[in-house]
Image: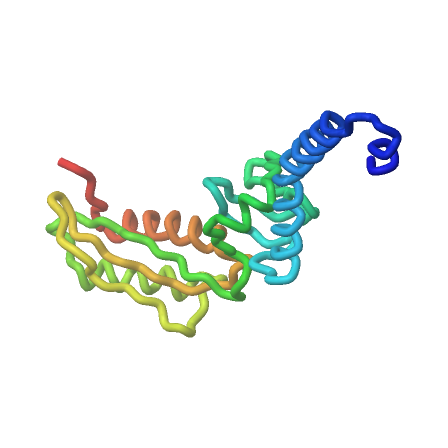
Length: 190
């Protein structure tokens, strides 16, 4: 530009064009640069790794890839979700795979006429017969609250993270079957 200017050519318009073009390029690459920096932050801080099950921005899924600009989740119903890393870096992330164990929390509502001690004993027997339920920490089965139409029994059972969903549905099914066998009525709004 200086050489062209020394030849007597007016360079003001050339400088203006180059400056405007440079600004447009920088603004266009701003989000990409932010995404790359966010990708590097994710790779080094490791809030999750490939194969972890995470929840972020309303999506729950298994991390399939962590790229420089995007991370890819495969949801539990087999949808591929591509999330920009700059969004991930600024979001609350729940990592379900980080710890080896997880707690299953259930609320079992029984009718007010129910023998509470019998109901708790039946629930404890179901838990004891579950191979996926851990003995330590000890399972928790206690009355949690009195509702309008029921008594709520809180059930908290620890299991391995990989067995979480199987343990949860097994407990729900087997508690209902055991209650039916013992004549314990589960409550519903009346």
